[in-house]
Length: 144
Image 1 (cartoon, rainbow, N blue to C red):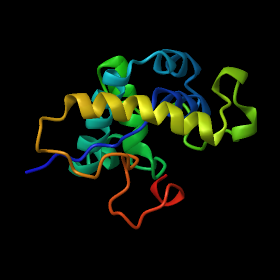
Image 2 (image 1 turned 60 degrees about the horizontal axis):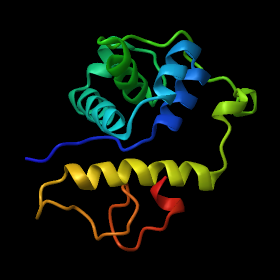
Image 3 (image 1 turned 60 degrees about the vertical axis):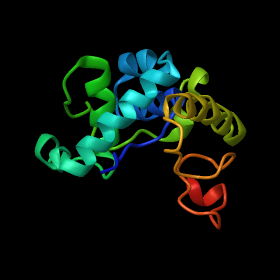
Image 4 (image 1 turned 30 degrees about the horizontal axis):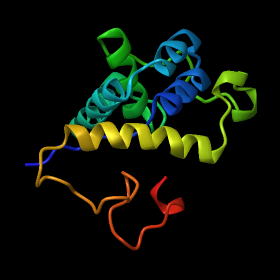
């Protein structure tokens, strides 16, 4: 049976942690390697599929598995963020502000690490498609 994981970037993790009141963790997340980001994505996927997110953070946001997995990766144990609602994107610190192109470029680094970690014959999508797209009719905007 396959493994569900959330594919993301260090930049995206850092942005979300900062917006949910975790600036110190955001700084640590920003420095994660692509391999560490993949590990965080596995944790996020396990939390999402197991339903543990609802137990750990009952009234948390819809993306609680993402946040809980990131915190578990950085601290060793999942816990709710300081904030339940996000701060607005325009309040992000300068080092976390990124254009769409910069965010896609960061995803390319994680995608390359994923391809390196995938055994031959286990690829799940055609080469060149952004990770997160589930079929050839998907467009880049539909995959985010």
